[in-house]
Structure formats: C-alpha cells, structure tokens
Length: 173
Image 1 (cartoon, rainbow, N blue to C red):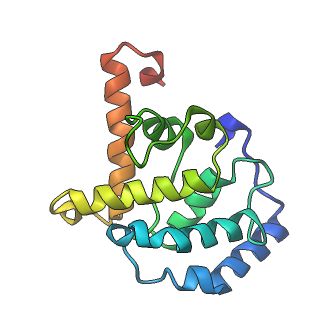
Image 2: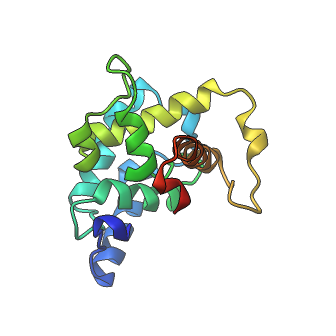
C-alpha cells in the first residue's frame, strides 16, 4: 500500500473502527456468505458496507480506503471478500470493454468510490460463479487460502504474465 502513500489511522482509532465494524449489523449480516453469492442483489449490502468503511468504521487516514478496507474485509471474512488493489484489480476493471457492467473509468481507478467497491466485489462474485470447480484450488496451507484469494492470485499472475509478454518493466518488479 505504500506506493500510493496509504496510511492507516492511529492504532486506537483503528481498533475502535474494527470493533465497530465487527459489532455492526452490516458485517454480521455478511457472515457465512461466500464470494459466489455476491450478485446484483448484493448491491445494497455492499453500499451499506462501503458507507460504514468510509465513515464510522474508517481505518484509513489517507484517501485510499477502498484498497485498505478490502484487505481488512478479506482478513475478517476471507471466504467472502477478496483483497483489492490498484495495480491489478482496478487496472483490469478499467481495461474491460466499455459495455462490460464491471468496467470502471480511469479516474475511478485512481480515486475509487462506492461504485468501484461494488463493481470489484460483483466482478469477483461473477468470476467465482463462472469458473467450475474453483474450490479445488483452495489450499489452506499456502497462499491460496480461499476462493477470493485464489482469484486474487490468478489476477496478479495474469497481469504479471501479460506485462512480461509485452516487455513491460513492471513485470520485473
């Protein structure tokens, strides 16, 4: 997160925000849900969660709270929420065809908002439903600890290989 100068709030605020989030009805209503269950009907819940993360349960001191908050959500509910980052997740969503419902604008990639959060989660949910037998790739002993993490790893790998094939300098980082 350091590349975008992301900063967490101080520890006492962080602790209070996480406690409020965990004690809140919105996150509690997410418990037991799986990523493949995130679809269009999940939009109100995702928007409520975004409102909490950007307001009373904010853990980021900087503006990049979509990225930091998604990582927190992934740790709290790893079978439901994937980690989101700018370099891979948001870059891919910004390069989807203009007619794709999960596409985000270039400016949204740099300044993610509630639409970006919702589209990213729904995109991952769509992929989780679309890939047969995805669960067989989960290995709780390694970096593929859940379906959201398997998809995150796949996205990073695809970006890396695509950049490398194109001779991109980022592939070597």
